[in-house]
Image (cartoon, rainbow, N blue to C red):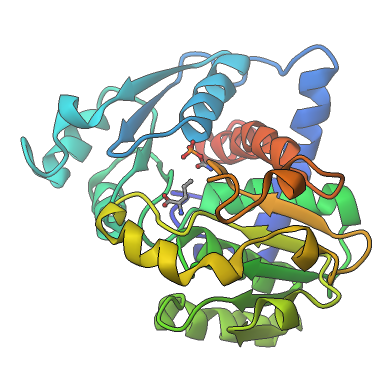
Amino acid sequence: MRHFLDISDHSSEELQDLLDFAVRLKKEHFAGGNPPLFKGRVLGMIFQKASLRTRVSFDMAMRHMGGDALYLSPNEIGLGKRESIADVSRVLSGYVQAVMARVFEHAHVLELAKWSSVPVINGLSDFSHPCQAMADAQTIQEKFGKAKGLSVVYVGDGNNVAVSLMQISAKLGWNFTIANPEGYDMPAGSVEQAKKTAAGSGSKLAFLTDPRAAVKGAHVIYTDTWTSMGQEEETAKREAVFPPYQVNAQLVSEADKDVIVMHCLPAHRNHELTDEVADGPHSVIFPQAHNRLHAQKAILARLFGVA
Ligand code: CP
Ligand code: NVA
């Protein structure tokens, strides 16, 4: 594995191996701690947008395993503004042993990777959020095992988080359904690619607009913000369109009785997800957030080639 930029770049076997490894690292973490496999290594973390989970979980992943992490704020490096992305990447490659970047445009993380002599990780772009999908898959497998044919249903905006969830569902043989308002579909190219993956894995993909029809029999209901970072000027328009897509107790009651409710967080409570559901018995939103730590340790270890 050279970089970790998008779920679609990796085989089902490679992804399942990472998930199994993350489970082992999690056990080890709670049984006294991980060995210092990252000693002498520093992760450079470029953030063009805000973050709690991604920033802290990567930083702690490095520290728990004997390494270190360096936070680089938008103002500090001015990616592509103060200096070209190609130059930032070539300079940074000489200082740190891997780079994690949270960018607005997906093309920018690809550009960083193109010029980098060290591994680059996509920590969320406008197109995808592959590290989130790894923690999500770990959380789903903790609940349901490795069964294929699970029904994973995403309700809301066809955004970066939805794309990565569709991709990993297709890779792991889960059925994936999205219910989104018209005009808020996932990018057509990502759907076409996932359909090809699904044909190989036996996963079924469905693209609906009716959330109630979508969640019938669902094992997983997943939602995310109606307005992603970078879309703030569309907030009022989106707040008018999305309320029928709220994940609330009534919607959850249409799903399988053992359904789990997921959200990548941050949640806009009582918009896309009600307090009642977020804090209710089906919710796994906090274990899901915590799994970012373990999933990312596995990704880092494979990229560093230390395990
Ligand atoms: N889910 C997630 O990536 O959260 P942050 O934006 O806080 O990193
Ligand atoms: N879709 C959200 C996810 C945040 C983790 C965004 O891009 O802002």
